Image 1 (cartoon, chains in turn orange, yellow):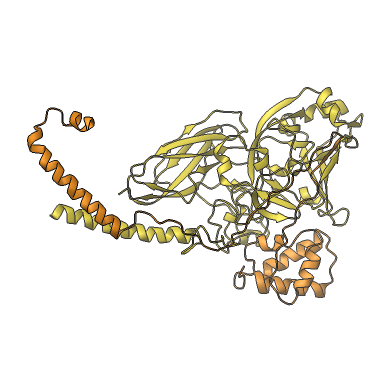
Image 2: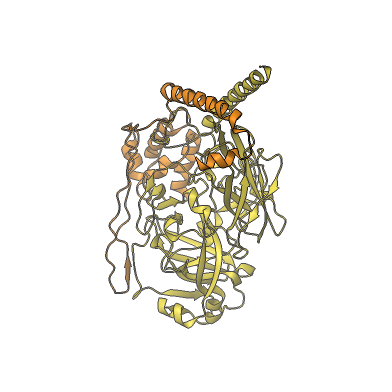
Length: 151
Length: 426
C-alpha cells in the first residue's frame, strides 16, 4: 500500500484511481480466464524409456606399498546384428579389439570395409584365411553400410 | 487497428520462418520429434556428425568421471562439452585414447624403471623416486589433442575413432625435462631421432603396429627442448588411463607423440620406420593437410608425419539445447588454442560467420594452454541463431571456414558453430 502511495506521488489520485482499478480488475479477469484455458506449464510427466543408468564403481581402498592399481577395466559388450558371419567377425576382430570398434564407425561401403579388413591383415598381421575374410567383409557390408545400417 | 494487425502479421510470419528454421534445427541434430527421454541414435553418417560430441553412451571408468564411450577395449573416452568452460580440464574428465589393448591396470613402482638407451654414451635407468629427486621439476600448461579430434565431421566420412570435439584437454604438466635426461645419458654424434615407448602392448605379432606403439621425434626439432617427462597432471598423479606414472608432454604437438606410461626413451641413429611413424598418423604435405579422395586414389599426395596443432576455438556454453527468452543476455563461453603459439584474438559472429566482433579473452597460461573467451550476446529477434567462433594465433593463423579432408581424418579446424534458440518472453 505504501508503495502504491509513493508511486502515485503528485498525481491526481481522484481521477486515476477508478481507471486503474478498472484496468486492474480487467487484467485479473483475463488472467484468470487464461489460466483456465491455457496451462502455464506442464508438470509431472514421466515416461518409461529406459535410457540406461550408470552404476557407481567401487573405489578400492589403497594400500601403502608401491603398487598403484585400478583392478580391471570394465567391458561394455555390444550386440552385433544377427546374420551369417557374425561369429567369425566377433572371433577375429575381438583378437585385438572389442566389437565396439565396428559399431563406432559411420556406415562404410563394402570397399571401405574390405580396406579395413585388408589393413588388419596386411599392416596389423591378423591371421585369417581368405575364405573367412570374404565372409567377414560380406557380413560387415550387409549390416553396416550406408544402405543397410540400422543400429 | 491496423498497427496491431500488422504486428500480428509480422509475428505470424516470423513464427512461420521460425518453424521452418526449427525444422532445419531438428534436421541438423538428426532428431525429428525427439524428446530428452529418448535415446540418442547410436551412430551418425554417412553425413557429418551434427553433434558437438560423439554419440556413444556415457560410461564409468576407474579414476574417471562418466565420459562418452567410443570403445571399451582398447579404451577410448571422450570429454563432454561442459568441461571446456574452464581453462584446465580436470584429470577425471580428461579424454582417453589407447591404441593397444594391453594397457596397465597395476603399476608397481618397486619394479618400474624409465630407461634412456640406444645411441648414447651412458645408458640410464631411473626409478620413479629418482625422477622426483634427482632433477629439477618444470611445469607447462599444454593442450593435449588427439590427431583425430572431430574426425566425425569429415565428408566423406573416414574410418577411425569417430570423435566429436571432446578428444582434447588442457592440463598443467609437471615433470623432468626430456633434454635433461638426454644430456645425462649423452647423445652420441650422428643421432637422428629419439623414440618413445610405453607400457601398452597389443596381441599382434612382433614387428607389427598391433604389437607395440612407438613414436619418434627428430633430435633437431626445437620442441625436444620443451618436452617434459611428466609425473604430475594438474597437481596430481596421472590417472592410469592418462599414462601413470609418467607420460611424455610435447607442447604444441598432437597427442600421438605424448606417449603414455612411458618406460623407454631410445636414441636412434636412423629414421624410425615402425608402423606408427611410417604408415600411421601421416598427413598430406599441403596447406591445412587437405586433399581429396580422388587425389589419394591417384597416388599423387605426398604424406608426412603429423606435427603441430592448427589454431582452433570452441563453444563450451551454451550447449546446443539452449533456448533463451528474448530480452535476456547470454554469456557465450569457450576455449581457444593453437600449436603454433599464443591465441591473440577470438571473434564471435552472431550471423553465421558474415560479421565478426572480438570476444574477451581470459587469463593467459602460456603459449600452449587453452585460453578461455567470453562474449555477452543478446538475441535481437525470435527464432534460431547460428553463432560462430574463430580464433587467431600470434603467427597470424586464422581458422578457416573451409572443411578439411584427408584419409586419416586429421587436422580438422574449421570454424565452429553453435545454434541457439531465442524464444518469446511473453
